[in-house]
Amino acid sequence: MSIEPTTLTLVGAPPQGVSAEEFKAVFRHHPAGVAVVTLRTPDGPVGFTATSVISVSADPPILAFSLAASSSSRPAVEGAESLVVNFLAAGQQDVAARFARRGVDRFATTTWATLPTGEPVLAGTTAWVRGLVEERVPVGDSMLVTVRAVRADRGGTDRPLTYVDRSYHRLDEHSRLG
Image (cartoon, rainbow, N blue to C red; front, side, top):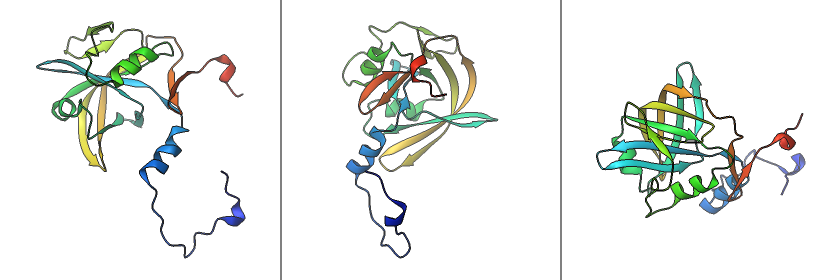
């Protein structure tokens, strides 16, 4: 649905609420990069899929992501001092799907290594960033986490995995506009 400029009247209009379903429908059509956030706990590695990763500041280098209150990984993130954001490559939709599932050992069939600082890093990604958790801010039914980047590796050359309209996509040379 498009809105014609002549039909949009905001002055004096009563405020309208947007339902959760309407809000989700809008963002289903907004493409996002796909990452897996990984961290270590005394009980072993923890990880989850995130499509909410954003760059917040280049100087100092800070990124952020959100995590639902209902996420099984939330307690681990609440206690973490550091973590790794793994940016998935186009061929890693199986990894994204596995780390989005509940009730499975997400690391069992995933190739990964441990950094000297203890955090797990996934193999085959386009890049990863290790960071120190700066803030955890409750926002609505989620938690916004800000992370100061302390190490980064851009080793992969594959195209990134993207997510739009409830499915994974790859960007390639034919998707470039100009």
